[in-house]
Image (cartoon, rainbow, N blue to C red; front, top):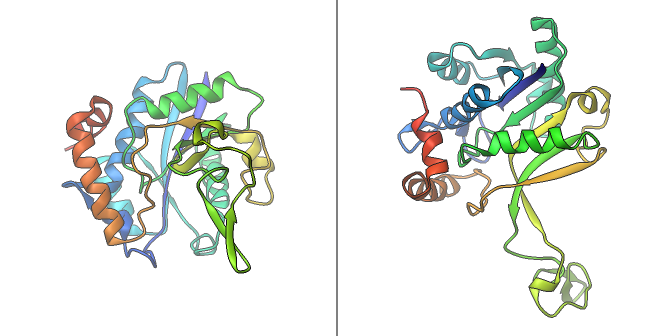
Length: 253
């Protein structure tokens, strides 16, 4: 039986958008959307032992999570991992080490689900996990969606006194250019051996695969405006698309 650790990670405060991990998103705590996705996966996945943990230096976030999801394992984040420039890889590694010591098991996979990416469909986490199972040669599967712009065709950079295409190419139509994806930071599925051996905090030191998700106008929630826009998009998707609605409906009351 495979052993899977799901991590949900959130720092206290935020310079760009204060206490964003504690916000209420469409009348429910933002973090509960991610918890719903985690427990939907746990209840659906076959032949796997799944543990869920919260890694945070925010007692308020821990209290909010444990109020409705008491079976979540709380991992206090040490001060040295709480800074703006700390690689998230270090937080994954701390979570893995902590849980393996606590549970007395060796996990095969670590799945990280981002708190500020509430717009997942009910099949997305399981789909990314299955992609990883099918590709033993890859150390990491992460999620993304088709980009609205393409550096081979309609993106430019400043060069001295003019602009040029980001990547020089002969393409005269976007359809001719290689497919480009935006990483949406929603789902990461790691082979744990890659986490154990990584010393740099850089994701690209293994073979990576992309799990395609529906384009939800990818936004990083770094401001009040981002948050409000995501709520507008979410209110439409939770009403019109069954895959999104199923996640919201499974949030614990």
